[in-house]
Length: 172
Image (tube, rainbow, N blue to C red; front, top):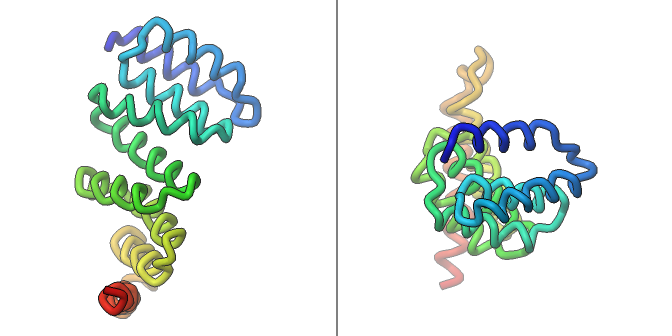
């Protein structure tokens, strides 16, 4: 993608008013008309609809952006937004799969882990959600107090995850 288009997209996103997305959507839709197969354009259009509360519309743009070859950090962001949007639409099983795939691709992403935990909670796996957040905390928050209790926090995180695993085994 040309750097001019990248710069234009960056400018549009930076100037958006999250409480009034119609102008941003209009500008992005015009770019979409010019670049209907550009993965970054597709992603930004989806993000604008998502921000505007039009999640069902956003999903299709996210899916097309990924199918058109979105990569790198923009793919990570798209995966997070797509997974979160699926959760908001009640499609938690699909959201769980999206986050599992994205976490495998971007294991260093704390934000993916946080939003995956929200999906796990929405799917009725509250213990796993909390355990996952505790594991993220242990790995990413560095303070004397947390460092002192890391083994205990890690143990509690593993225990919580095991509770949902045991429930899942009993159900089958």
